[in-house]
Length: 305
Image (cartoon, rainbow, N blue to C red; front, top):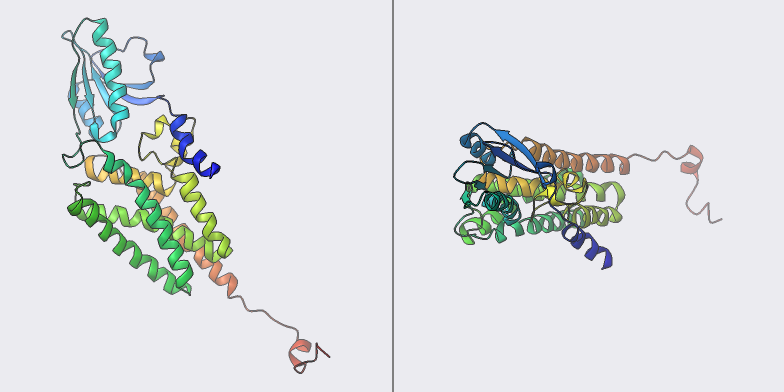
């Protein structure tokens, strides 16, 4: 229990704003080196808006004589909005001006605080683990397990998309895109658990669950930008299934212009990696054992005699 508490609470307790990608238009930020951001200069406000919609930056500050404007993306979470607005407020106070805030990518009216979107990561993780455990315990044979994984990914993706979309209204993007992403996220974890079980036996299920639940999930950045997780761990978390799936769900729903190549490559790599582990475990366990002719010719009971 201490390890579980540490795994889930450490990223939150040690999180700090550092090198958050933020755009700047119309000048340079004062004391930029001391701010917790990685500033990128854009020629115009429109360019900064495009960068936010493509998730190149989490927000932007437009500097002008009439006072600064903070361009934020509510869909990226309250933490990023607070950081960008906080820097804008400092600049406005120094200029004795008023800060204007514009939400370029607002959250859905059905999920105004983003709590539902942030909570999406845990059902995807738990659903993948449960699917992997059930298939490992109830389905025998590598071909049948591969078929079971495919069916689980399709049916699970559709059902969870129904719950989070039409039923609860948490996700408001394309239903079929959401179902595809959710199914791929659960399939990545389930495939890994099944593959480790085929390779290592019963301990493989525990290893797969621990990797996903206690390592990958806390580092996923599902509830806060991964840049806020201390050290390199936030970026490392984006190479696990929970991190890639959480980012992909957010991008499909709110950032259709953002590149999703990294996330899809990560998910496909884990899915195929699990399949490869299953095949290796299957062929290793099915390797015939060749006994010496003397052993085969002995009559029953010869060893006991």
